[in-house]
Amino acid sequence: MVILLRSFVLELVMVDLVDIKKREMIMKGFSKQTIKAYSFHYSKFLRSGLSREDYVFFLIEQGFATNSIRLASAAIKFFTGNDSKVFIPKRKKKLPVVLSKTEINKMINALDNIKHRLVISLLYSAGLRVSELINLKNFDISFVDNTIHLKNAKGGKDRFTILSKKVKSLLKNYQTGNKYVFESRNGKYSSRSISEIITRASFKAKINKNVTPHTLRHSFASHLLENGTDIRYIQKLLGHSRLETTSIYAYVAKKDFLKIKSPFD
Image 1 (cartoon, rainbow, N blue to C red):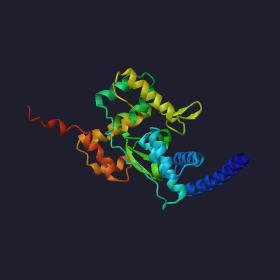
Image 2: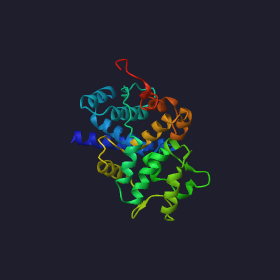
Image 3: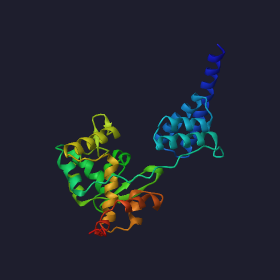
Image 4: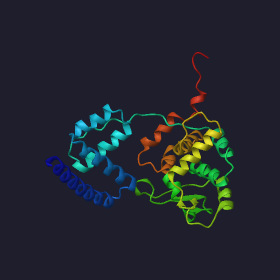
């Protein structure tokens, strides 16, 4: 009986604290995904009954991905205060998967559905995130300036990116008069639907790489760098806050890299 009462009290305290912090996150402009993730991880932490350090160590022992552990650590730190000591493991620096232009064209040509082909074309040609593609409205696209105005993107920031001339002609023929560029019977496309389109296209194109929607964004940045575009412009097009984030593409761009000859040759 006492154990049940304690559990009930803990649940009430947890709900109140999470609700209070949710309001704070909304006021600070956190995205819905971040609010949901922070609330989820902190609730799991409270239910565990472990200390902050022990909980993070538990996640590491259980083999959770580094990004998941970093997210859980950040959530605990936010809920318990910035002065609290919470171990946050270093992010593993993995090079992004990048497709060649030939591989991207194979993916596009592997699909018969015009809308799905346009999804891939826009993700790649404008370097869009999935969330940006899903929320893209027809009036955000300027056929005069050849620009796409991305509003309230990651971090609540607005930015402009480029509209490809090839995609421009496809869009003009595709326009449906709907509010959003891509809509299904149930409204906006979901991120899951976009992922399924990319997976199906890469499979049909017989591409032996782990291709995700973000792979097309990586390819956009890498190909711009290979074409000689200043990395600071690429940073603005991608919406990166720090140049350091964009600099990762210097390691995967191949134009200058392929010019280097091995001393063995």
